[in-house]
Length: 114
Image (cartoon, rainbow, N blue to C red):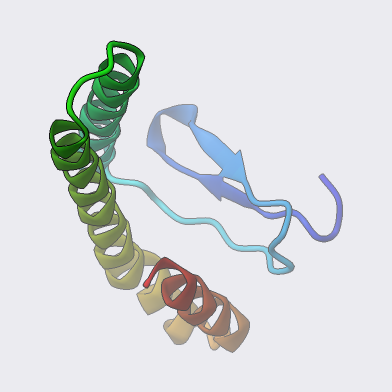
């Protein structure tokens, strides 16, 4: 891992890194929250696969748009959950540790999401 990478460690020996970030911090991901997030991703993927099938089968465009709205709603909901969890856990700890760079990076990420 380079100096620009950082690792996120969680229970159950799961970890992930972000190559674009420049800080080093770790945080816990609640297994129940992670499961909810993965379920949301699965629903979004299911909706998106259905959109693909609809386009391949020349389904009416209005119906395709309705299905795309379901994909967007699932992704927005996932983003909100991730923001909420990150604020309650990671950002709280970053503030306690005086890691203002982590707070600024999170603010930038939220702005991109919005």
